[in-house]
Length: 153
Image (cartoon, rainbow, N blue to C red; front, side, top):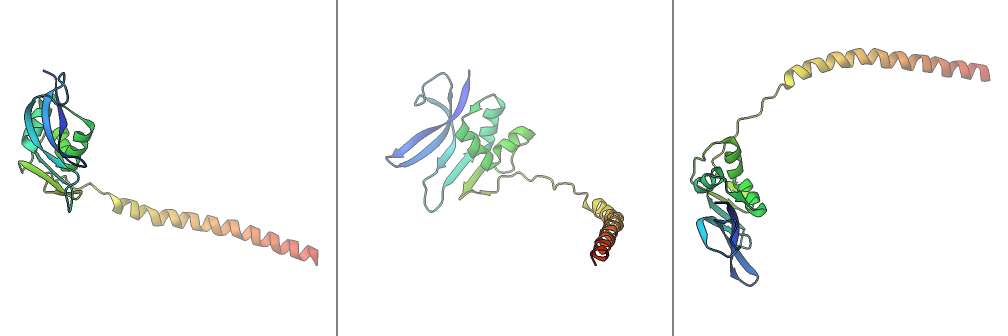
């Protein structure tokens, strides 16, 4: 069965909230849902709320369910897409975002490898080689300007 992960709207006029659900992709948008993964509440006050069961979401993604564009963005904020692409499982079962800040998504990326000291040692040598060249270029220009001044007198 072709399954999709999409948002199902609820709430009243001008006050929407969405349930993140798994549905048969061939059925209509307001059709029966197979599973409910979480909620997305963009108009919540004081801050927007996204809460998703990450383990269930990863299970459906690994079975081939296709997320909609908005669901993919919500999953990216929660760190679920990183787990999906890396093939890992989160430490926490529920991922929660409040006010655009991830609250313990359960993914700790390794620190990047930096090789800055080797580049820093090579830089002073390069400056030392270029400095005499720059001074040598300035000297003939100064001599030429002196020669022009002498001829004019």
